[in-house]
Image (cartoon, rainbow, N blue to C red; front, side):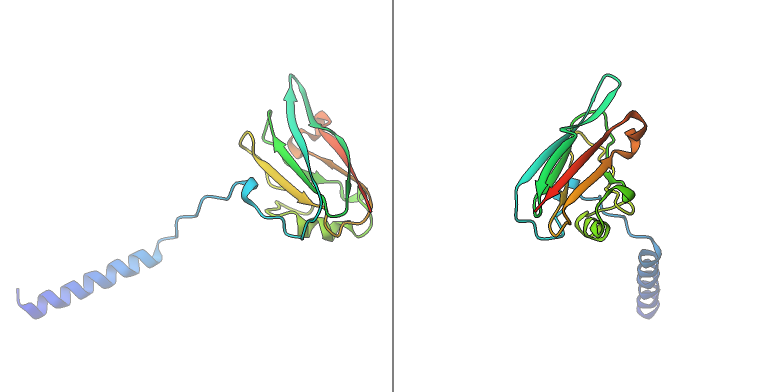
Amino acid sequence: MTRATFVALSALALGAATLSAQSRPATPAAPAAPAARPVTAAASGSVIRVRMTQTGARYSFEPATISVHVGDIVEFVNVSGGPHNIEFEKAKIPAGAEGVLNANMTGRLGNLQGPMMMQPNAVYRVSFANAPAGAYEFFCLPHKAMNMKGTITVRR
């Protein structure tokens, strides 16, 4: 084989390898754990922890009813019985709250719906920065039929 043929074949092989690598889909990166997600809106208040649990056939938020101030963060922790998530009832939140919540809920699956928390001790945070005062009813979608619901009251 002549040197020119060798160089031509090498260039052809390199080009084919490059095209092959470019045509393959990229391997998706592993999703970030909910605990690592930043709060979108600036939060300046306290962090209130809500545990998501299963005891026997009972699924619950502990506590299920809480009061927060504008700027506080509610931290939902998947303790047992997952997967869990947090979703707000669109018809049962104050006027003007939908856009604020959607902006403050990172990694949403849909309107007013946080991601599924699959792992024990996974954390999902919802900021109430800029949130209108009033009652916010929420639930866990996989366990809504089992009455896994709660209410957050936002105060000024």
